Amino acid sequence: MLKPLILTLAIALPLPSYADVLVPQAVTRGTNTMITPVSGEGVPFAGHWQLGTLLQNGAPARLDPAALAQVSLQIDAQGHGSGSNGCNRIMFQLEARGGRGWGTDGVSSTRMLCHGDAAEVERLVMAALNDSARYVLTGGGSVLQVYDADGILRLILNRAG
Image (cartoon, rainbow, N blue to C red; front, side, top):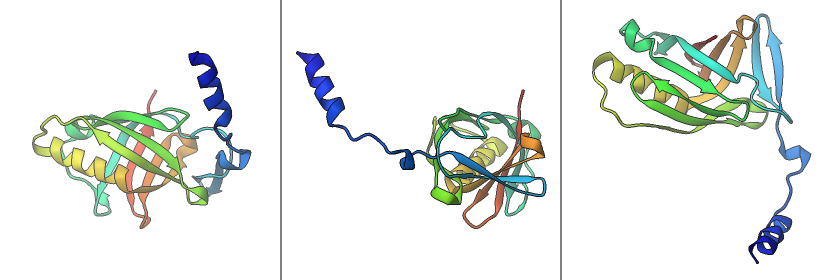
């Protein structure tokens, strides 16, 4: 009895058209590649990323290197992300924003109390992910730069192993 109901519901659901599916398009300027979704496959910068530079007001944040070293992101081909914001575990979803690039949606974290520089690193990383509007690959795909909607560079991540 349950199988016909499931089959009926599946048939009633609209199927996505190919125009609704996004694939990345790379636009290269010099050594930088801006990743712009336009139609089809997965996230082009999937992989494991380690924080290279955390920026605060356009300059590298002057925080404890040990706290900065704790920041890492793992992004799969579907845009599901997880990792560490320096103190807590984080989860997020990358979202294609038409021809405007990729942004981060649904950023959440565990709620362990953070102290000192670890708390500031966490705050800056969460703000950078929440405000992200554009991702740019450089260094032959080994460096990922995260920009906000104002075009301000917020994070520089290095591809890890």
